[in-house]
Structure formats: structure tokens, C-alpha cells
Image (tube, rainbow, N blue to C red; front, top):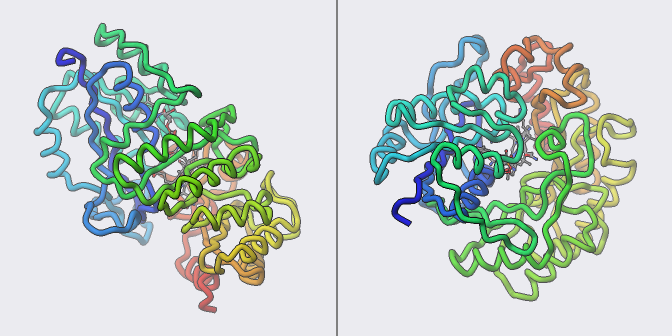
Length: 436
Ligand code: B12
């Protein structure tokens, strides 16, 4: 295998005003790395957005280094920073690679984190000026023209990148790769073993979402809804548990509970049957309408430690933008979870804040409704996303030229409020936290 081409897979830094590692792992890049390895390439990983491994918590603060605020965001009363490894640590890791890679694969996440992509690619250029850089991921998919012009990558690839990368690498390296051994349902495991940190396994039991909510980009990223077989899911979780003793599994699925009796419940039954000592987490929201008493009991039995439910647009009593919430879903879903033994503190309900034309009264009513039913409101600031149904309204109301620069899609600056207001934000945050 010594002659197989080396591919460096790189997860850039996070550049933002605020960022918290809430089970954040570069799963897309790990999937790419898994596929490349299965095809015979040698793969190295550099995760610039990693945190020190010390300590037990799979979530927490990233080290932050203050960097100059981008000119377009001058005036925002917050400190801009680079989150993750220091520049020296990244340089050391690049210098320590046993040989120059034949190609570098860079992933991307939030559209407005592109300064991290640019910075990472610039460092790669210093070390390996002639090595082709391929960029993919969420930023590359949602704003490809911007990525082509501004990222510094040689290739910008949109959408699920497995097939495209194989073709480009075959072209660049002349290495056809071996046929990847396919599992029964065609999902090669992500190369999670390459991460230094095995505290948390990011996990997908499905790709895509059958819903199409106005604010969400899921359909643009993955047009079809595909699920793995429950036995395959279980086999993968058991595999990682056996190999690394993983305790925390964070599901990234956009629609984990759809058709639960055929999908999630058999998975959870298996987790319980095998006696796997896991804590399960859903940092990405669950659909409230699918939480029946049976589902709630299984979530409890299988030891879900972090539950986030999506109420999202907070339009209690009004029909707005959310294709997946019906009247009564909040009450019924939370009642089922409470009945199953979850406490109010354990049931977090995401409420989107900062939507175009959203009145504070709407958010306040939703916060109170969530508290009343016995759950905990969690405010999630809205990030406008090109290509979504809500985009044109967001562009219209924003005080920034949202389409001109994805930097303005940053949720921390409340791009769809008439102005940034700490006072307004703090008041709603306090209300959500029960500090009225
Ligand atoms: C899991 C998730 C999270 C996790 C963390 C994820 C992480 N790794 O850090 C959590 C829950 C923490 C999170 C938080 C947030 N998220 Co989020 N999240 C997601 C979610 C559901 C899945 C991302 C994922 O890992 N997918 C699985 C992998 C396998 O897919 P992938 O990364 O796209 O990779 C594939 C392709 O892109 C491509 N690819 C990837 N890399 C590469 C590289 C190369 C070279 C190539 C060729 C191809 C390629 O191939 C891969 C395999 O097919 C997406 C929605 C979605 N469906 O994608 C939203 C999403 C990315 N999040 C979004 C938002 C808004 C947020 C929040 C701001 C929400 C909020 N208001 O609080 C926060 C901010 C986070 C922060 N830290 O500050 C938005 C993006 C907004 C934007 N402007 O870009 C999305 C798109 C959801 C939406 N609303 O539409 N998120």
C-alpha cells in the first residue's frame, strides 16, 4: 500500500463571534475519508476545529483566539475569533506529515464560517503550493459561486461528494482506487478512528428529510430521504463501542423519528438488548409530532441524555413556515416524555429567534408555552440560507446585503432584525432561562 496516493482531509477552523462545541464533529469529512480509505488511498486527517481531549465531557468550549473582525462586520459589538487549534498547532501537524499529500480535501460547514476555510486553505498553500485543494461541504454546496471565487480551492464540489471526489482523484493521481467494499446497505463507515477524540460518536441513521421547512436547507444539501437498515445501524454503533469504548453517540439525522416503529425503535431495542452502556444525544432537533408514548418510553429506556425538540418558528396557534408541527404537538409530545420519566430540564425545545417579521410577543408566547407544558425553551438564532423558501423575505428585511456576502448569514448578528440589540436579545434569553 506504500505507493497509494496520500490524501489529507482537513476540517477548517470555526471563525465566529460565538461558538460552542455541542457534539460538533466533521462527520461529512469523515465519510469522505472512509470512502477514500476503502478505495485504497492513504488518508490523513487534520481537524483544526478540535478541542483538547482532556476531561470527560464530549461538549464544551473551544479555545478561542481573537482575530480581526471582517471589515463587513465592523461595528458589531462582539469579539470575533478563531476557534480550535492554534495556528502553531496546525503548522506543526502539517510539518509532521510523513510526506506531501497528492491532494487535500477541505470540508465546510456554516456558510458564514468561510473565513476559516480561506485561512486553512492559505496555510495549505504555504506548505504544499502545488497540491490540488478540493473543497466540498455545506458552505460549498449552498453558495458555490462564492466558494469558487473566494475560498482559494482548485475544485469546488457541491452536494454529497463521494462519487465526484473519486472521479477527480482518479484523474489527478491516475490511481483508480479499488472498488470499495460495500456494506449491505451501501454505507461505508466514516473514518471516525482518525479523530484523536473518541468521546463522542457523531452518527447518521439517515440522510435528508421528507419535510421541507421554509427556513431549512436540508433539501438543498440532500434532495432524497434515505435510511439505513436498523441492523446495519446497530452493527456500526456496536463496532465503535467495541473498538473505542464510545459512551456518547450524537445523532445528526434531520428526521430521526420518521416512521419510528420501523426505524428508530428497532435500533433502540437493539441498543438495550445488547446492553450497550451508551448515552444518546439529539443535538439536531427531533420532530415533536412523532413523539408518541411508545417512542418516549424507548427514548428513556435507551438512555437519551440530551433531547432537543424542534418547535422552531414558535408560531403557537398560527400556521407559519413549519411543515412538521401541528396544533397540540408540543403538549402531546412533552407530556409523553414527562410520563416516560424525562425531567423538564432534560427536554430542550428549540425556538427560532430573529426570523423576518417576527415579533417578540410571538417568541415570548412560545417560551411561556414551552415552560407551561413542562419543558425548557432553548433559543436558536436564525441564520438565513440562500435557496430556502424564507430567503427572499430575509433578504428584503435584512439591514445587510445578505446575498452579497455569506458573512452576513451569521446568526450571532441577528441579520433579520432592524438592528443588533443586546437588550432585546438579553431580555428574551432571560425569559427563556426563567429569569424574568
Ligand atoms: C449536525 C448539525 C449541527 C450540529 C453540529 C455539526 C458540526 N459538525 O459541527 C449542531 C447541532 C451543533 C449544529 C448547530 C448549528 N447549526 Co447545524 N446542522 C447540522 C446538520 C443537521 C447536519 C450536518 C452534517 O454533519 N451532516 C452530515 C454529513 C455527512 O453531511 P455533510 O457535512 O454535508 O457532508 C457531505 C457533503 O456536504 C459532502 N462533503 C462534505 N465535506 C466535503 C469535502 C469535500 C472535499 C467534498 C468533495 C465533499 C464534501 O460530502 C459529504 C458526504 O456526503 C445540518 C443540516 C444538514 N442536513 O446538513 C445543519 C446545518 C449545517 N446547521 C445550520 C445551522 C443554522 C446551525 C446553527 C446556527 C443553529 C442555531 N441557530 O443554533 C448552529 C450553529 C453551530 C455553532 N457551533 O455555532 C444550517 C446551516 C446554516 C448556514 N448558514 O450555513 C444547517 C444547514 C441546517 C439548516 N437550518 O438548514 N448543527
